[in-house]
Amino acid sequence: MDADRKLLSQAEAVLRGNDVGEYTRPSPRLYPHQWNWDSAFIAIGWAHLDWSRAKREIDSLLAGQWVNGMLPHIRYDPAVRDYAPGPEWWPDVPVRRAGEITSGISQPPVFPTAAYVAGMLQPNARIRLEWWARVYEPLREAVLYYSCHRVTAGSPLIVVVHPWESGLDNSPRWDFVTGSGYRPSRPYRRVDTTIVGAALRPVERDYDLYMYLVELFASCGYDLQAYLPRTPFAVYDALFNAIWYRGAVDLNRIAAALGRPPVLTEAGLRAFRDAYHATLWDDASHLFRDYDCRAGRQIPVDGVAGLGAIYGGLVDARQAAVMFARYSARSRGYRLLPSVPPDRPEFEPARYWRGPVWVNTNWLVARGLEALGLRDEAQVLVDATLDLVRTAGWHEYFHASSGEGLGGDDFSWTAALVTDLLLRPLSQS
Ligand code: 2M8
Image 1 (cartoon, rainbow, N blue to C red):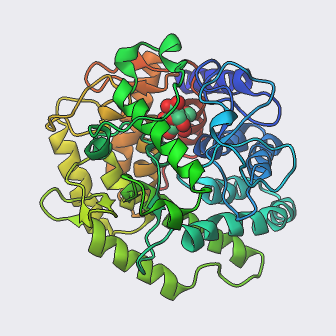
Image 2: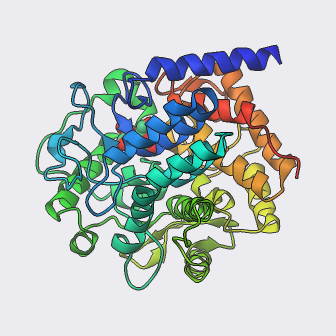
Image 3: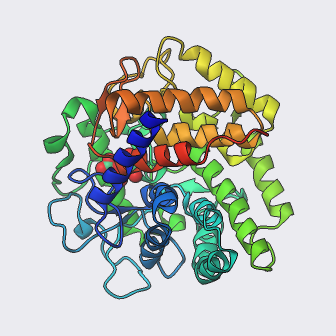
């Protein structure tokens, strides 16, 4: 118990240290602006420690909303200078509020779920409903942005346009494009490798592709239909789509609490579930896979993203148990859950999203297992996660076999989600 108290006070110190008032930096030097899904995870942590601060985190994320409803992946802080790529790479972003400076892509939509979870952590129902009533419309537009502007060929699945948008930037699932020699027309600067060792970060050819796609998407006016015929990268990402689905369900819960009709109808959600299973399930690996929209086929690479459906509530308990057991068995001898199964040739135990363990993906899967009643499995994952942080500290990610802390220091979502795991223990049901 004392050990948990110590962990909690350290977590709070990390969040307070990264708090710049309106938003919380994901990591002080490496990521000094506001990131979309980071802020969602961070708000869940704040909701336990300082509820008004949680509200402010979501409010400031919503301040960067575009006219079409999109919530961008980065909301730049004009006071910060030493980050690349800066806003000059994202010209003419259609923000709603004058003075907002943002990137031109989005990120996995954890924010409706964060608004729901944070709201439920407010014991005063009047205060909770007042806040939900205020943020409901921007949240609704942000969720519907994807179903209106990010779909193609009659499928309800959402198209992700950039590896950064997936949140799992250099995942081997995207290697089918990074190897192809795409480069931007202009030189670009990297600051990440001046802060974190290059062996722990994406390689040059990854960044060449990232910057190429940034230029291309911006030149298409950030419009999917213009971009699709020209881009080598347009995917149905299994994790992103699962997170969207869960966000839509949680937004419907907020709507119900406010006495409003559901944002997504039951028929719409069912069609999405059916498409998700029909398009992304891979029976051999017992995982969901991603789908290359251009080539019209699944991407045959496994990763922790394939377990996202457990968090999404897109599978039943029986299927989730088998998926989790298989992934764990493939990871025997390693820390749970490696971002890439160690039996894959692309596995690199220390390099970013190519093998290391991350607290956010563990949290997503553990909360999903819990919701399905798979408490023992969820507990295994929660214990493994807390053990990593207790031993190694507040890092961005952890070496898949040694558990060593890697990447950015004082990492906010690590602190926020550990806070949530300690203060909202797994339910018994
Ligand atoms: C990482 O992404 C940024 C670019 O957006 C980077 O590598 O510089 C990813 O881990 C992403 O998921 C995360 O939101 C961001 C900030 O923590 O860092």
